[in-house]
Amino acid sequence: MPAACEPVLEDIEDIVSAEDVKPHDRRFVRRNVFPKVRKRNSQKNVQADDEPPSDSIIPGVQKIWIRTWGCSHNNSDGEYMAGQLAAYGYKITDNSAEADLWLLNSCTVKNPAEDHFRNSIKKAQEGKKKVVLAGCVPQAQPRQEYLKGLSIIGVQQIDRVVEVVEETIKGHSVRLLGQKKDNGKRLGGARLDLPKIRKNPLIEIISINTGCLNACTYCKTKHARGDLASYPIEELVDRAKQSFQEGVCEIWLTSEDTGAYGRDIGTDLPTLLWKLVEVIPEGAMLRLGMTNPPYILEHLEEMAKILNHPRVYAFLHIPVQSASDSVLMDMKREYCVADFKQVVDFLKEKVPGITIATDIICGFPGETDEDFQETMKLVELYRFPSLFINQFYPRPGTPAAKMPQVPAAVKKQRTKDLSQLFHSYNPYDHKVGERQRVLVTEESFDSNYYVAHNAFYEQVLVPKDPLLMGKMVEVNIYEAGKHFMKGEPVSDARVHTASISRPLAKGEVSGLTEEFRRSPQNGTNWKAQPSAEIPVKTRLSSWMALQLPWQQEGGGLKILSVSLALLAVLVMFYYGGMKTEL
Image 1: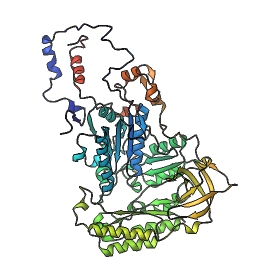
Image 2: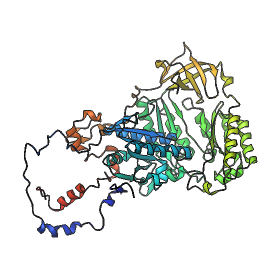
Image 3: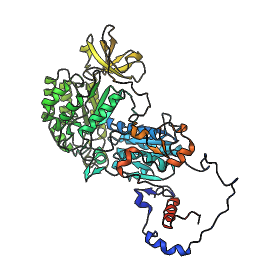
Image 4: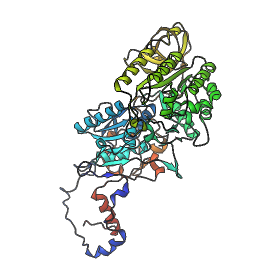
């Protein structure tokens, strides 16, 4: 059982048991109820109107630390949760020590990521922090022992994060893991117009769909994200427009498989992309996310045209995972090596200079030395400038975890051999001396440079001149490394300002629509201001009744307190609204 006296609520129905008195029966016990008046001392027993009870918990004033692991889709979810919490009044802090609550947004792709997640939970508990768990780990396996007694918000329920945080702060354990549906059809997830805090105010991450059509034998993410569910094109275009109006100059499209987009709603990826490029302002760029080979094969001609568009990076992430057809069959990848080569060869011919990134798993169950050598040959052939090398980790509950495993030492050696091959070539040496146009969007990890990307989404480091941030500039490439180039801005070149308006400040909430700003609170307008600026009395009287605008379509709040006070209110209602205390 969870921690003592902390019931786990799956939904409001959990509050009422079969033994509770039914409304029909309550009228028959009224004859036994006698009102009793309690004397009050106006000086001692009446609390000041503008101060809460000393033992009360006021939601919306606590500090919250958010940690996200994993892919860009997960990062987007983390940004949305931060935005909603900040819009409600919570303070999002970068200091985990000062936070009252930790929101841990997990990744289930590999064992190390889940280990970090588990260790963070333990550290939070040792530090007496309240904890809310999110992401793919608890969604896929909510009954794991180390998750017991903790609040969980599912990957499709992130629009209800405020509710879960509030209940957790009050000492309750709440779990929302359901799927969003419309007339029985699964939706892509929470609304795209929710408030969010972008980690980088210049970059908007848009999830175009959730889930996928595959059933890869090694994948745990499928257990969390489920089958394919796509967002309508008009909603995605509207989200892009809003982002540009807030100063964004680069959009990332993400999902578990962007290539499968639209197959569930009667459209496809090229149709979406053509609609999006129509709204990209000059100087802004679009980056396409990962796509598996089967779903891009039928769109190669259109995809090549789109990737040649001046406002779309000539970049595509196509995971091959292995160059052995027998291994791919055991993985249930639904393509062969020849399919992957066809995609790469066609795009390299039609989109000159395109960057192809790929993933490889080393030591998948049943992989022989011959299978691995085929993978080495593929890397030697294409010399991928961006290669994600992963040692195989069996994930609990996946078919691959039950297969005969490759010895750990062999997996480790293969990972090392492939890494050595990858680091044996320098993909950018031939570009020294070129003049390139780059978009500057972030600061380097060592804080010594600004980071920009050229037309092929290759990383170019430029001087830390604040005037360059968010701009598209021309540079001369004077140095190249394994993962980057260095460029010096050309003095006489034109500078393009991509944004059509001033970018939001770091930490500023995006998507605060007029609907939210004017949400009625006791006859006044709710300003979405920092909680410290909202009078205590106003917060106390309004927070319980608040139905956030982005939640109204969901039928209102379902999570309520499990305290006896709630049942007392219901009893009072059926007693005809008695005003005296029992």
